[in-house]
Length: 112
Image (cartoon, rainbow, N blue to C red; front, side, top):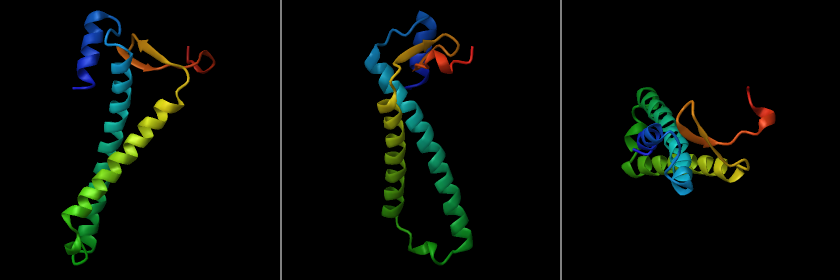
């Protein structure tokens, strides 16, 4: 919802018309959810591995421990995404390649 809809609106309008606040929300949520889903997938795989290797120790795991682990993963992802926003000093740029808003890249680092 936070990735497809703004991109679709940008594609129809041929520019970013949703405003700066929505742009920053979009740029915060997209990498945050990507990071969290990837790390949660890794936690799931590691948990399954430990379940197979140590079946008797894994009986002591509780739902509360799983919820705390998931909360820690989401907090970690939010911190990473927030740091990217805080450290950004080049502003936002609309990309006509992706039809999406991105962080600005200084000209000395551009690929063109």
